[in-house]
Length: 274
Ligand SMILES: Nc1nc2c(ncn2[C@@H]2O[C@H](COP(=O)(O)OP(=O)(O)O)[C@@H](O)[C@H]2O)c(=O)[nH]1
Ligand SMILES: [Mg+2]
Image 1 (cartoon, rainbow, N blue to C red):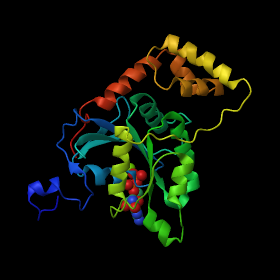
Image 2 (spheres, protein in one colour; image 1 turned 180 degrees about the vertical axis):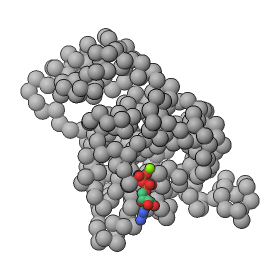
Image 3 (cartoon, rainbow, N blue to C red; image 1 turned 90 degrees about the vertical axis):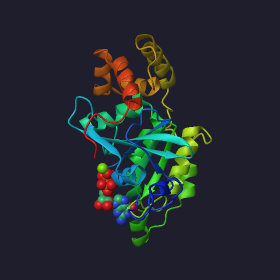
Image 4 (cartoon, helix red, strand yellow; image 1 turned 135 degrees about the horizontal axis):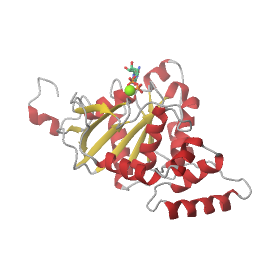
């Protein structure tokens, strides 16, 4: 809020950060949980700050030295909790950052995952986009740094990209706020179910894979009742993913599901208030 505005002006003001109204610090009663994912340096924190203003909690992810930021905003009568995930190029290997991002998307089951991508190096960014779309249908792509892309002479057909990916794609320049109102509208559409994305899925056209997946998935369900995203986990096990295999043999998958579900819904952050 600008110091020249009366406090109530934020209720109806569309500027300077778009139509989001800032909330107080307690976001325990949020209607929707939104995760922010993306490669490092794509403007995730800039989007986060745009949406939440200065009302943020920062701290660490439980048991880790990885920074965790979360905040709240309201839009169209609903309260949203926004969780900034560590910047990663992939969800596949077992670095602590990737593990945190992967586990939150898998087990925290955010209502919407906003993937922030750099429009200047889209091809590299799409690797993470496609990995996230293997886990969740409920995603929105924020095609950020469009101002730089334009200055570099790049033209991106966002509509076609949206069609091919099967999720909303919103061109943005988060630093100036361009595209943020549209981003909020798409987040709301996905969170409310008004729009149900049907994302591009990598084809599983390997002979026998479907049957193998069904067998592993059945075994996982029996061992870990209530497990989220069991097919994705089964696929990683068949690939020989050591990190996911370790969670199964140690028997910690079920607890992770519970912990992350609780973390997603919990009030605020555990750290100081920024
Ligand atoms: N030109 C331009 N710079 C941006 C934009 N969004 C973010 N930045 C800048 O890009 C850098 C990285 O942004 P940051 O939000 O920290 O990225 P993060 O690592 O993904 O959290 C910062 O210097 C931002 O000011 C944008 O839309 N346009
Ligand atoms: Mg950041």
